[in-house]
Image (tube, one colour):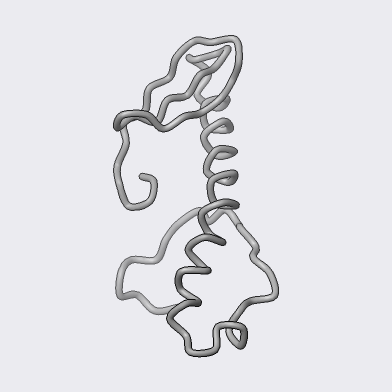
Length: 92
């Protein structure tokens, strides 16, 4: 899943390791395509890099809804890996 859409994973042998989103696929280019832990590391790094870009963009869009956005602007943004999500409707 990425930005609410599901993408199929395609792992391809290539000397330069990178991850790209193309035509409904999350394409992972790897020197070791059969090494699932390496693929996971590449995908995790890609998600983190995309989060560094997308979260501030989304935050700016949300802040525009407030009459005085600067009063609600956070001091910073921390991105953490979460192992599990709570079921919808569950409380802390």
